[in-house]
Amino acid sequence: MSHHFDVSFPLTFAEADGFAITFTLRKGSQFRFERGMYVLEGANGVGKSTFLNMLALILGNIGPLAARQAGTIRFDGEAYDGRGFDCYRAAAIRERHFCIFPQRVFFLPVSTRDNYLMLNGSDPEQAKTFSRRQIPDRLSGGQQQRVLMEIVLDPGKPVWFLDEPLANLDVRRRLDFWRLLSQGWRQSVETLFFIDHLTTPLIRRHPDFQPVNVLRTYTENRGVDGDAEVDFGNIRLYYSRNPEPFFRYQMQAVTRRRKRGRSDEPLRLDKDWGASRADAGHKV
Image (cartoon, rainbow, N blue to C red):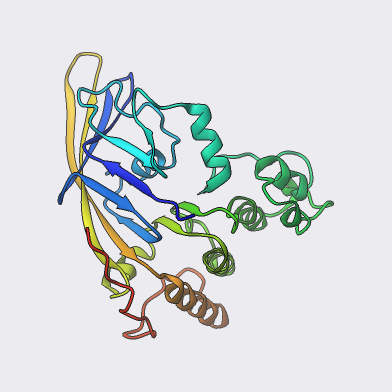
């Protein structure tokens, strides 16, 4: 089964404290997120993470506190909006289909295997790859990050949401990350959503990733006195139908930097790393 998101705009998320953000499209009022990798680029605070959390069915009050309620998110045809959102159904969908990283979880004071079973636990065979003796709280920060990646980034789940996944990762952990992405893509992963300031400039310039639309954002933050701070922004959407060559290049580039002992330098794309334009087309 091919999983997909159909989103109608304007899409508004609002909170009772007076904060609201509305997303519209530069082109059209409907967008389908299909198989492939989507990259969101925009300034800090423009709403990229909020939009991902809405797609991931984490932010449930879509529209009910806002003036306009036209927007709807449909996952595999099932609609989620202000009136129809069911947090229990959403949780069940996330458990079956979504990986969200980084995930706001705390390690339990048990083995890494038991942490996997309690925090994910979708695959008994995968559980056997985790140690029954290792306690995550006794590992270094880098080792904890790797265990968390291996717990959360489940190759058996078709949709991955990745929000600044490379932040605070050294070169070795970056290599682990790209390997996990490549492994997941070859197995069951169908759709990737990606936010990362380190690699987005490289993606933006490469022909394997094409701009497909722009999310326009309108943010309103109203205080108790009734005065509102209003801001506008843009989130550019880039798309690749087949990101596997990009993953391979990242692994090669990270490996080269490990050999040179350069761990904190942003990766740079060569003029041509063998990427194909064949799958670059994606029409809005």
